[in-house]
Image (cartoon, rainbow, N blue to C red; front, side, top):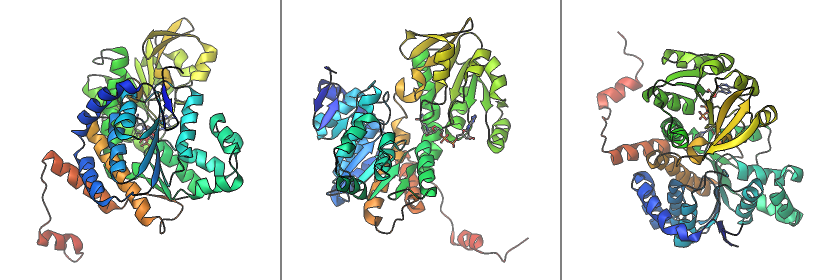
Length: 447
Ligand SMILES: NC(=O)c1ccc[n+]([C@@H]2O[C@H](COP(=O)([O-])OP(=O)(O)OC[C@H]3O[C@@H](n4cnc5c(N)ncnc54)[C@H](O)[C@@H]3O)[C@@H](O)[C@H]2O)c1
């Protein structure tokens, strides 16, 4: 790729974009007061001094603020993208040019380049890894388990050049990892259950100050933003079908309703379905929702939630988008076989012709909020990335006691992030009086 600025220490699109990346990163920083406070402390205390940290995250302005915070804490940071479409090229350039951070990420990179960048992050020989979707940790585990055939070719070819001792040292060198998203945590818990997890992992997603805000309000707003930027459709009066009523689905359903849509929820979990029903949404099986929806959005973390049988039942012109982590929620392979297309009708919008009707798939079924918009607003990423920075510090401080399992950061740290966020927002709350403390701790008092 001739347009890229590739050196041994980085591979980004164009270093001349750095100034714009810096301006946008500084704009995000204004809404990240908790991370700023942490950066100040990290600069003084250097808790990550001498550590090599490889992060596989969406390369956005918020991630840039995290990377700089980790660097301020003393870490030698390498960063690769966690999705081929989510990199902001100006931000990647800014991190390389202004901070000397090793970045391997280009928006729109092909599958081989994506994995070449994962390889580069592994070749950094990290003491700590940071993941969003467990691609880095997944590769490390295939190496540990000697399942080289399961590695993507760029990683496999590199691993084959390493001696057995070198491969062992690569995995054994990792003191611990952190994981950002639901899908990654599910994968890691499965590894722990199967007894194959090689090092402790902190599930950042499990912090209350992460999923209650990032997944719900961040995904809610930015998913709508991505769909609107890609299509400029009118939401008011349209019927939006939300697949999955977990944290992300709840947030998106709320925002779609707020913009005037009639919202239908599909679920497989009776409790979540009941919650959606009582929250005032219509709950239907996808086979029925398919006939009435105008816009369909998957937020389940599951595979093939929207299948060809559903697409055949849809109205002419239905729009399909995904905001779950991987691009497997819409069955695009099935669509490719059954339909004619794609025709690119607008950036991020592909038209497919299926049985005399058209369906429009946004952003190749990849995370619409990161592909067509800018991902979550900085204010929610402030809390998610405060969790990430504290999780990295926790791994360093407690590597010896942490078992090879999936942990959450201590609840006191989670509560501290909420306290700092409230303070930054200028919101004061009450404290328990001594009488109330006693009352809540007692069991003798009754009616
Ligand atoms: N777009 C983003 O920026 C972003 C941000 C955070 C999380 N995520 C990803 O979004 C996905 C959802 O995350 P979450 O935190 O909401 O998870 P969650 O576990 O809270 O919710 C997922 C919901 O989907 C439901 N579901 C599963 N299979 C389904 C099916 N076939 N049909 C209908 N519903 C089904 C589950 O019952 C559950 O209620 C994950 O892949 C996560 O990694 C994306």
